[in-house]
Length: 504
Image (cartoon, rainbow, N blue to C red; front, side, top):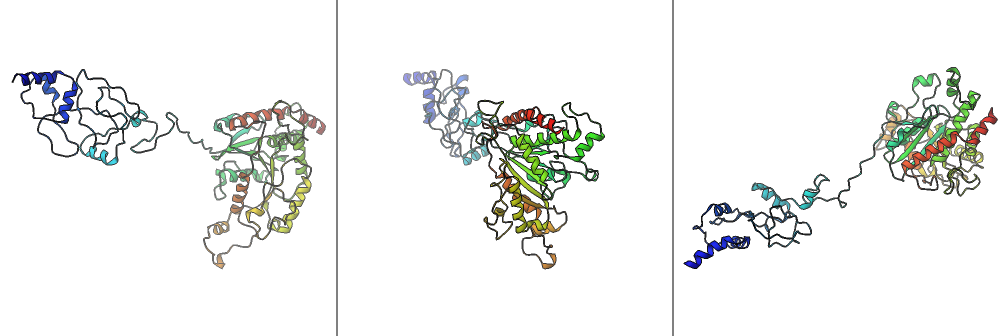
């Protein structure tokens, strides 16, 4: 027939529309069509759902909806030239470079299920990935059904670098060091804890136990190096200047050299070290070094721990009052170089001060003696602006069961730590899950174990309020620059220079 003879070539001369329609409803196979172009367009049809395959050759089409389930996915095909261009989809659809497939709505893009993916892999076909998996490859784990970072292009913050040991903030020559800057971050939730004390009271050991170590560890692995046996035998000091350590919880610990140290004085005299020109006598220089360090801690720390190993030295409290008097004024918002007077408590900053009685004996844990110690500290610090009471309590730690808060009339920030045990009795007490046998009971000590008391002391120190150090909220890096400026001001302080002149 003439019409059928003209209709078939006309059907193949048109665009893809009739060929797509022929694919959806296949008729009898056109076996009378020949030619190289027609043979190239026909490929065997593959059924993904496992049904019976048709006998005639079908067109292979390429899908463009990347996340369509396999049950609703159309048969692949190769687009012919001259196909009409489709407008790009808006959401979750990405067209292939070869061209688009008409007939599918752009707003339908369900995700590929796990069963469909496994079925495609069994049939030797690679499942199509969602668009976000292709575009955000390398930004994180975006597996099938996995959560995606809501902020595109935002990289996750790396964990802060963990310090293995302390570093110098101020060296033995009283010069500022910048090596601590690389461990600091631009965040404001930080706590600064400093320590002062006489020589041999255990400052470095206590700071190591508060920051990163436990009593069971070897003291040679502490972050703040403690005195070695050789140094103890020659009555020397281990720490010099100010050591810096910051924990993963963003708590900055500052360990200092001993105040009024006789070993530092002996080192100055026997090694014939030249003194700065403003100091005439070695003992004056040692005392001024101690006052500079203490005044610096009173300005840049939230908490200052005063450690003593016997109760009590009157000269220590006189030294604290002198350092408070010579403390640089807190910079005000309008004048950074000058601050208000020390009598103006509203603008002047004073830290929390905690008295730690280290190496305490058993009789010092007696409630009667504890009450006398609190009364003595309160009398000695009565005229001080330092926050020496109301922020730490041993009675809240259940160390003295049966004692209420009314027992201590004036409770100051005083905590007692016994001598650190090195034998196995303390380990036996900590490890006991049930009541031990009477033959294995340790001797009466009159106080909890050292590890238990250190843990309670650490909890109370870390729970202290973090007052604002200056007129602006400081980040860790801003605190470092602020502390460097305060240290430079302390060394050049006219009040300290005048006090040094009066001593000599």
